[in-house]
Length: 304
Image 1 (cartoon, one colour):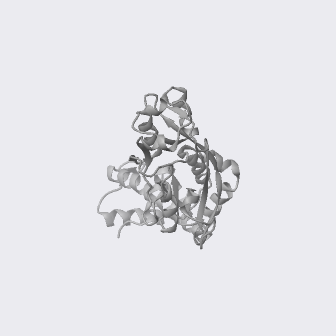
Image 2 (cartoon, one colour; image 1 turned 180 degrees about the horizontal axis):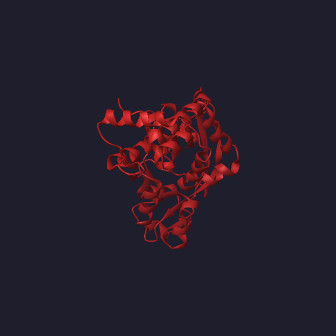
Image 3 (cartoon, one colour; image 1 turned 120 degrees about the vertical axis):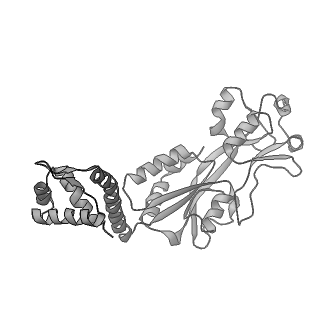
């Protein structure tokens, strides 16, 4: 194979320093060694990389193309070298994080930005899940860390190789569009009244675990949508009713697009979410996120 990183480094140094002699000095080589590398590269490729007709060797069009693409290879090789060194020092190659769709992704990205500023060797793979799907991704091996696991997804805080800790609390309220029949009811809404109207639900993304349903009544008609944002839009459009995170619909309520109704069940409902992780997948990246999540303010910022 005619191309190697050493030849590309020499070519890069010549272009940056302006001459073979200056490149040789930077690379701590004799000028004849630099000349030999370039001539051998030209012979191997069968192209001229420098126009030597003038007092100063200038890159040909082929030389410019090789250098432009070659610098990308040099950068990739440098990143690979640093990544391998970091992995050898305890950084995972990849950390997979499942995030429940109810959490604030904008705040999650702030956390990701802080992590990336550490220049870790670890790549992040973030997936979006709903309800029991967040826990399902963890126990099925699709994720190493799960943010937003619900208590309904399991019966204990620590199960086998998986541990869970409290992320925080948020409030759910029953909301309908102004034109919905339940909007006109003045008394506390009973289960019997709510059951008569279609509910809007977000589909659980579990693959191997039993799916979770929240706030649905037996015998109630259900419209299932893919995300919590779709659920809010559907309820604002009058397509159904149901519980929504208070923090996510504040502006909708202010604009009159949704009306919060009190129910005979204790309302607003206080819900808890946890973060869970596989203790066998621990490395520096996992420890970084767990250290951040130990602070209550981090979890509360992620909640709706």
